[in-house]
Image (cartoon, rainbow, N blue to C red; front, side, top):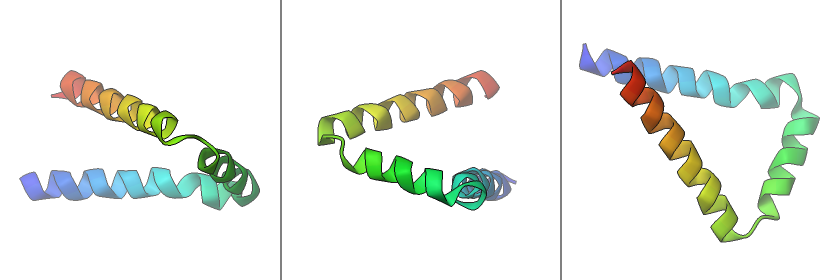
Length: 62
């Protein structure tokens, strides 16, 4: 059962990651271009925010 949960999580992640490029490729390209202009520290900060948000959700659910 544990492996099924990982596959479910991976599947959901791939669905969410694919939504923006599928629905609006032009806007997605613009966002990626803007992200490419950020400094490394800014990208790390947003990565940390994503990690913390994900951990908070896991804590709330689990």
